[in-house]
Length: 292
Length: 291
Image (cartoon, rainbow over all chains, first blue to last red; front, side, top):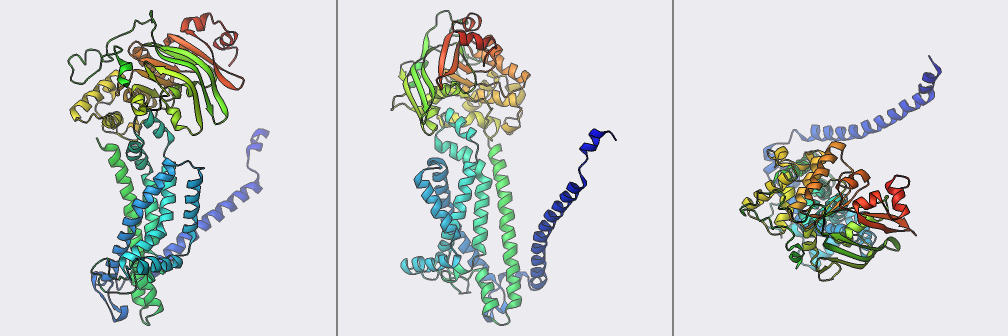
C-alpha cells in the first residue's frame, strides 16, 4: 500500500479507544433505559391484575386496602387543573416580561432570575409548609384542593418561567426585526410570531411542571390533605395519587398491592400527559401555519 | 402626517379601484434617469454610536425621489446602520445613539412624537437573509395589513394577488397560498419578503444586500424586480456586488472606515462614482484595488 494511504489508516490504539468510548456510552444509555423498563415491568406485574374500570372509579374501602381510587383520581386532576390555571398565566406573563421587555443583563431581570433559581432548588416540603402557613391558615383556605393546587403552582412557577423564557429568547431575532420593519406592534409580533415559535418550549415547560406537580407528595400533605372522599368543591380536602401511594405504603398495613396499582396509574398518567402535550404542540404549530 | 411624504409620488393603490390592475407596479412617476432630482430624504451630519463605539460619523446626503441609490463599501463601514436609521430600527438596538438631522419629506425623523409604526409602514425594509414568517404564504402578506386595519377578506385577497404579481411570484404560488412560506426557495422567499413590504404601500424601500444570500439566477430575478421598482419607489440598496450597483443604481454613495468610524467618502450619480470618481479611495475601491 502506498505510504499516503498508510497514514490515513486509524492507528490501532486509537481504534481500541474509540470502541471503548462507544461501549461506555451505549452501556450508560442501556442502563438508563433498562432501569425505566425494569421499574415499569415491576409496577405492571404487581399492579396490572387489580387494574380495572372499577378500580379506577370506585371509592377506596378499608383505608385503601380494598376498593378503588376514583375520588383520588378526581382530586389529583382538580389539583393539577388549579395548579395549571394559576401558574400558566403568571408564568407566561413573567417569561414574556423577562425575555421581551427587559434586557438580559438588566439588574431587575437578574434579580427575578436569581429568585427563580433559588425557588427552583427549594425542597418541596418547604413549599408544603409555606402553603400550609399561607394558603391554608393565613388565607383561610384550610386543607383544600385549592390550597394544594396553589402551593403546587408556586412550586412549578420557576421551571415554567425559565423554560418559557429560554424558548422565547431562542425565537429568531429575524422575526423581531422583520416584524418591526413591517410596522407590527410588539404585542402583535409576540402573539403571531414569537409565542408560536416558542410553543414547543412553552409546552415542554408546562409538561415538566405538571409532571413535577403530579408526582408531588410532600407539598400536598399539609395543604390538600388526606381525605379520600370524592371532593364536592375546590374547598374540600382531596387526596392526590402520590399522597395515596405514600399513605398506603407507610401507614396502612396490607396496602401494598393497591399502592402498586395506584403507582402504575400515576406513571401511566404521566406518560399520557407527556404524549398529549407533545402531540398538542405539534398540531398547534401546524394549525398556525395553515391558518389562512 | 406620514401620508404627506407620499403626496403626488405614487397613486394610492386601493383595491377595487378601477385601473388598479392596469399597472401592476403603479404608474411611473419620475423619469428613469432622474433628470430633475428632487430630494425625498435629507440626511445632515448623521452620526451613530453603539455605546461608546462610533459606527457612523458626519454623514450628509440627499436621497432622490423615485431613484435607486446604492450604498457601497467594505463590511463594517456602517451601511446597514445607516439603513436602520431611516426606519428607526435603531430604536431596537440597546445602547444605540443617533445624532444629526434626518428629514423625510416634511417629517423630522427624530421627532419624539413620531408614530414609528406608521413610519415603518412608509419606509419598508428588506433584509439580507430572507426572513419569511413561519406562517402560510398568504398570512405572511396579510399579517401586517391586518395590523394596519385592513380586515375585509376580499380586499386582502386582492392585495395579496396584486403584490405577489408585482414580484412575479403569483404564478408560482397561486395554488399553494395556504402552505408554509418556509417551503419556498431562497429566491422566492426573498421575493415574498419584498411583496410583504410592498403590500403596505411604502414610498421608500430599504434593501440590505437583498441578493447576497441567493444563487446567481435567483439573484438575477430579484435584481430585475428592483430595477422595475425604480421610478415607482425610492430605493436605497446596500450591496457588495459592484457590478450590480453599477447596473441598477442611479446614485451611489461610497462608505469607508476612517478614524474608526464609518464615513461617507463620496456621493454622486452612479456613472460618475464608477467611471470618474473624485476621491482616491473610491477609485481604488471601485477598481478592485482596495476593499
